[in-house]
Image 1 (cartoon, rainbow, N blue to C red):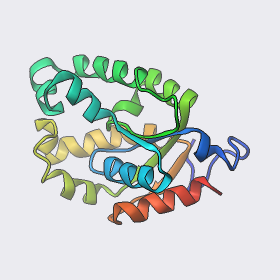
Image 2: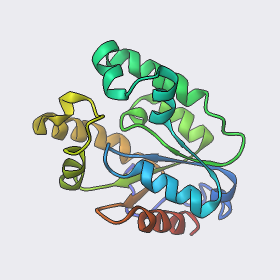
Image 3: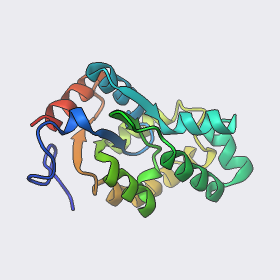
Image 4: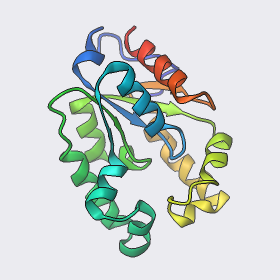
Length: 184
């Protein structure tokens, strides 16, 4: 179901939800999940987890190298294991990888353990940011493939509990906007 910015299911969680539950940030690479997530965690005095950082630490290599050397199926399997093994004993802000929320088993986990927030960022902003990222999978440096992947993933992102327009706004502004929408 597609929600307008700030729109959510009526009665799906209480006004105290953000204090008691995990917030999972979803969206395409370069939309600001990590920087916004860190800002949100700081503002809320909560823990922050970047799923890609967890994977890189466990595998002792960058995501791009995992893709190149071991392939996407291997990466998706360890990504799911990393997600399932997160310590969510206290409320956290979690930045998911760009593809994490496109797999049913991961979507189910997120829905059972918190709220999903789609950081909606225009493709031109994402493209400009991704051009400077050396640690992204190489095939994404091809503009046509980037657009195709974005369009493939967009319906999954739109199924998140909440959509926040991130645009090219500073991370702290997006974090404050997100928290304000969650507290409504």
